[in-house]
Image 1: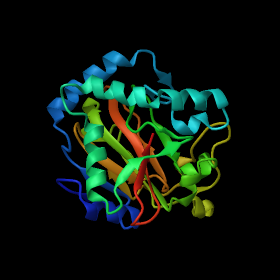
Image 2: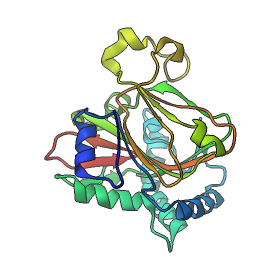
Image 3: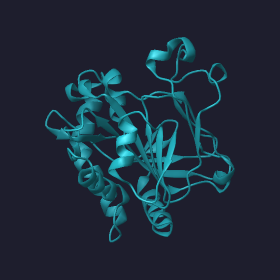
Length: 259
């Protein structure tokens, strides 16, 4: 189920963490005009960045697992990276900081940055998806991919967040759309094995997605990343987002944020 609301609410968050919804979409969560301006500023400061299926200003935390030097670099630079994003937006408000505040205000246990080795993890990485870039059907589960992060072992669910600063011209026709299936790690007989030598699952082995979200500039989309999800390719321009994850343990515990 997709929940669409004019504003983020504690009720919508509750439906996500309770498994009643696969995703929540808040259209025009941040001013589309300001998002376009911020996208230009962010791209001007991105430089070569980190290259994966998308370009980013920071390596994903899970990609530092097992790499001592990469983990040390990530933790040493996390605070300055978040400050740099804030500076890119100044004097405009940072959309990802706005989200951090609202999550803290709306959730009964509040919200805070996830920390590891006494350092805050980045929340709000920049993702730039160029023409042809896509994400195959996959799952994002921190407790599986980073078993040394003890707080993650308590998570009962994990939420991905995307604030869309720029979308391709064909977004309304489904370019770059998010596809969601109510399938997880326990559904191995249905989702099959992952693709050898890469990430993700075979799309042809899956049923049709249960939810398809076509985000527009300024939208906030939150999705359960412990359930199968994918991103369709684009061919009419780049897609730029502020992205991150939220870990949930129980209603009385704070939401934990990272990228």
